[in-house]
Length: 222
Ligand SMILES: Cc1cc2nc3c(=O)[nH]c(=O)nc-3n(C[C@H](O)[C@H](O)[C@H](O)COP(=O)(O)O)c2cc1C
Image (cartoon, rainbow, N blue to C red; front, side, top):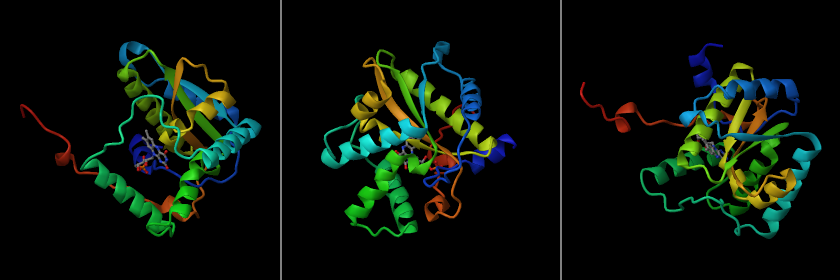
């Protein structure tokens, strides 16, 4: 697959088929992703790859915890809840597009809660990836991890696989830490669902919008 085809074909998939992904293929994707650049080549990414019974246990324990303590956990690292425009508008547009596609009416909090909970099933993907970095690294390492994740997602697409990046995993970090044995000196940053898209699922028909270049780029000296 040509790079540009992979770039355009990648999208967040939120419903997967159960078809397994072999460990060797995940290892290959991780090796490809590790070609991502990082500041001073620190390569800060650490990845927990979950499948089978461990994946099922993680799903069970996080969802059970979420039922009893829905609001008590937030990311361990600083995250703002004070998004302003234009970011809040873009976020709402994505939510509106997604929920109208899957038939969840505005204000249906139960359905909304259930749909968001699918994050913690990795949207039924057979493989989940949980990314951590050492707590004493600085913000630049978060940038490095983002580049690593996008490299991985593009490599997956080239291999016929689909993905969804998931910040949702840092909401219930304490359970994830316990189940996977993540040391206390690491932040649990993000997850990725990895598998084969269920193309019949309406949610996968979502096409997210982008701002035109002139809305975010300022050219100097041309
Ligand atoms: C860092 C990061 C965290 C994300 N977290 C979630 C998440 O928790 N759940 C989810 O359904 N999508 C999540 N997404 C997917 C975004 O909603 C998606 O990338 C965005 O809407 C653009 O759509 P696209 O990926 O289909 O191009 C995340 C994406 C990124 C990059």
